[in-house]
Length: 344
Ligand code: F6P
Image (cartoon, rainbow, N blue to C red; front, side):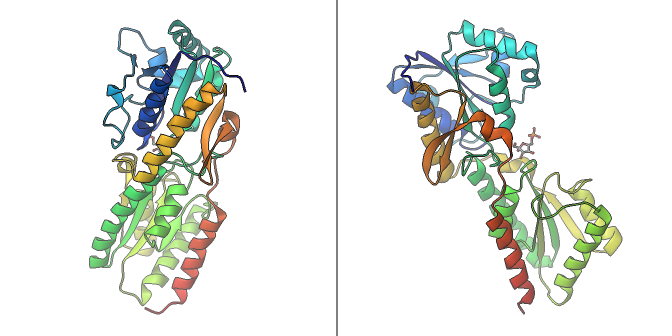
């Protein structure tokens, strides 16, 4: 690896914000200042590279800018999805901005869509590109965890524990929808940790025939509730049920007379103060990103595997969505089987 003299690095946060993004920005800026490298923060994701200069789109990040932010959710740089990064014109404009500002390397904290943008940029701009995995979805391949995932899981667990209290009081059935776009990492982890009676996600519930699945679900709920006066919580991944979770609850009511309440947890899962695990991961990854740039790395994502930092080619990180561990899927199956045999 070449040792390159780096003077100025750009950083931005892109796509769905994730708790811990601020901690990563802080660590990166602290590390860069140690090496007397300037850091330019671009605002509103890739829009900060593309939009009109009349709107403040970038700022030289000082140590005081990152003071007191490690515990804050969201991102001080703001975030956005940026469809213009899918166009040649947008990519060219981004490259012009980076060249005009003499940026040697660009760090993007985000998920797969953001890393796609970073990969596409390489046709137009020849600086170093580094990704830091920041998404609550935990779906990037090559890293055990992404920044924000642990906090999102924690937030959802706290919420469902509260739902359980009221569900128990009324012996009610709830269907709680969790985020994850097309991956069940949040759904499985939260479902198991909350002792959900059912975990429905892409990995274990293939909806080939919606009507048949509805009938199956209804009979499972009825069988479980038959001799037990208890609450019943189903956690379901967003985008799983074809016409939405609220309709699933309505359909169960209509076809099987099952009175259940749908609760879409939604964006509450993206907010809040990052848990220690995310603060630590973000801090390690922020420092590692700076070290990777100094070492001459390019087109890589900072990752952590078995507690050790490593580098994964960006292409590999986004080629496939990281799968939920089969052991987790099996664990849920086993717990269900055991619970079904247990007399309460
Ligand atoms: O990628 C993070 C995420 O929160 C997904 O879990 C979810 O599907 C999506 O973003 C929601 O995006 P938006 O906030 O743009 O609706």
